[in-house]
Length: 160
Image 1 (cartoon, helix red, strand yellow):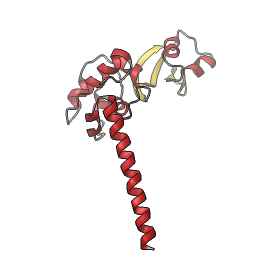
Image 2 (cartoon, helix red, strand yellow):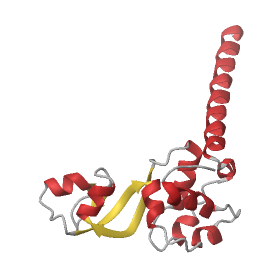
Image 3 (cartoon, helix red, strand yellow):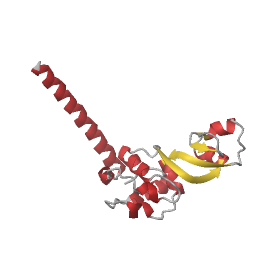
Image 4 (tube, rainbow, N blue to C red):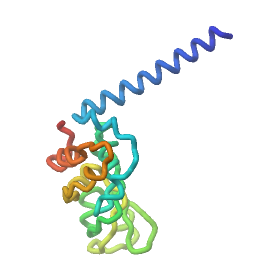
């Protein structure tokens, strides 16, 4: 019985170690290994005038995935612009339920109608960021969030 328990424990430790190795290697590959030190207090979320969740940029850097979806709440664009950027971005038209941009068009929302963006790719959210620096100021451990945003804003990729 103890031998089986030892095997299970060893297997669990190896799985945890592999997960941590993958997570660290992704963060290093993105060029922002310091992003792993974020402890998700989410104070940055409250500081963005556009309602973009800066923690989403950190998650994107940790996974080395600029296509990771981040939340937003104050970005208003025309539906045709939303579809051009990403047909799968989540939008809301007036008080209707949240849908993908392409679904809103299929439901009869006019292409020139103004919609509120609720989820979009990190690389697209970075293009809307005014680079005001509020997220940097709000971070209690002073992570340089602007570096991630500027990197994504340059070409939509992580270049470190």
